[in-house]
Image (tube, rainbow, N blue to C red; front, side, top):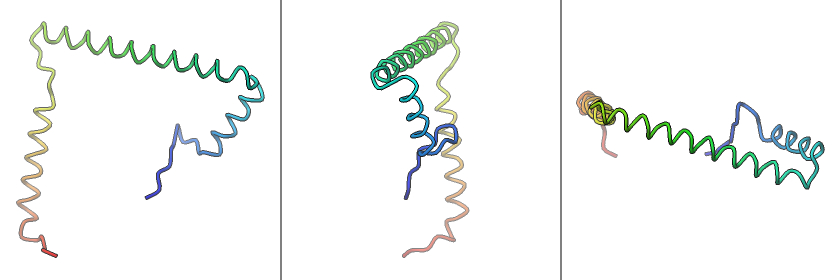
Length: 95
């Protein structure tokens, strides 16, 4: 199986070309600083989203809202699996 990384439908060659242009525009000494700044920015966004999630969870718990939807989803998945097993039971073959 071949795995390909797609980021916004950009192929590997296009990513290399973009990195080459960035290297030409900013220079080799500025690229690590830019990457470090992007990393810090992404970390701040991740922390902010985690804070928002925790605030929503706390607020829902305080108001008695059930936030655990996995129980419902899991029970529905189990029902579908049982239905499929019931239908395909006589069709299955042993190899």
